[in-house]
Image (cartoon, rainbow, N blue to C red; front, top):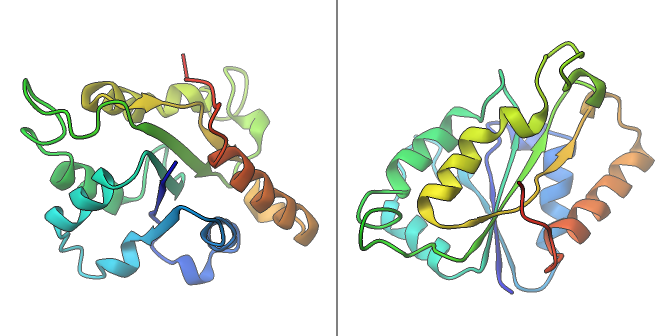
Length: 179
């Protein structure tokens, strides 16, 4: 299985967790890590190159920090440009059908905050529904997301373990589909 990890972090160099996760998974065989903000500092996306990358891989991982209950802005712009009608969806568009889509998201907030009784009032599953709906539209298999909460308080030991857990999870060929 060939895995493409699309890292959407606007300042990856200063990110402790997302940078470490990307570096750890990049060491693995059959993994391509694509740092999208670094590739497009002016946000001028090469749509054909991005589509070719997607076509060459079996599993697509969207790795990003959770900002204001959403994705970083370049991820939305990337979706709008790359997942085009006639290529990713439409009556005869099946370029991504059957591929796996995994979201790997990090949050500053603690896990307890993402519940009906928590500070945010919604679960991560609920907050990530727009990505799941996109997955349904483009025909990918939406896998249960990998979430890291409370990233500002993670110790160095927890950081190492989180990166290892991320690699094991993202490359597990038997991941469950998100309901």
